[in-house]
Image (tube, rainbow, N blue to C red):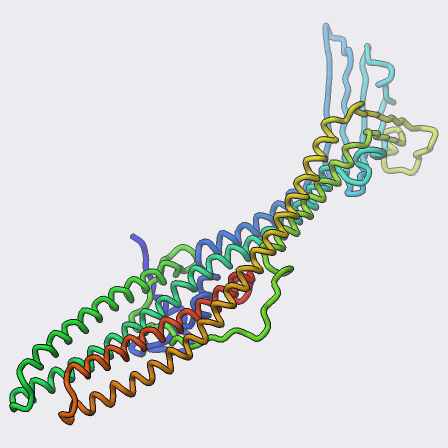
Length: 459
């Protein structure tokens, strides 16, 4: 059975908060909890750890290697040959491989060039690539590309968090808006209930006609329906918020009934428009992708060179392996050369990589333009929302004054039920519009953080 915990306990246990007290949950607390506990965020973190493991795995290409092999042939009691070779090979990132080897060969029909002294033959050697692989090779390139992959994983983590927190922030603001709308509906219901009770009393005394109670009753039912509708929308908003709440990515959480969102306020934009052309994670991802392709290009340029490997080994009898008796007169060396004549495979492979680099640069420029355009659009929407919020607040305040005045006149018998209801409906509609504009300013702020790529870095 799925275990469900109460989120409020994890947020407020350290403050001595009582569950009998209503407590506000801020957007910052909400997003911070998601960043640390949501499965998607944890998967993104694991991707970074996997990239770090891949770096260590790539470095394993330069781990020292133990070598060994034996080959024997015995027939009719005669040892035709017996060859034994063991040693240690140490690759380096300079493209030079060092090795320490020992050979013990004997036999009646052993190839003369394989003969060794009675106690064997040891040698210290080095192998160097003088052509292809001198400046870079697949092993060294793999380590560099693994480091780029790690940096890409960091950027991908920021992009994932940016997307996740934006979606979660949207539903949180919707929760704030529906909470305010529900409270407004309750306010309208309260006025209608008070007036209905007053009308019943006045009708019983003969001060008001009975038809007024019919109209007030109808208005009361309408307000109750509005409250029910707002309550439904609030419940759905809470469910949407809880969808993002987890404990360590394993246990789904529920909001405590005494936990409410912080009040909506007008969020105004800064004077200067943030410049995220070079800092947005998506742009940085393209930078690292270009770095990766550049390492690939350098490797393929290296493939155009001929292969020329040279090895040189100093020889000494086996017991003197760790002595200083090595002389330049006892040695063996070799060289190997390889060069395709037409190089069609190598040249076309390099051409494909160069095309990938050009396409990536074009995509990066396009992405920069798209992000800048979205940022300008969001800033325009934000400025407009702030202006509308101020106007809506003014309108709502004036309709509130009119509604209060009309209620006073009605109590004194100087107004009609129709006018009171009309004034209240105008006030409630204006107040609802103000709440919507407040929500828009908050969503615009969230959208700007999202489009600049700073949302994942802000919490």
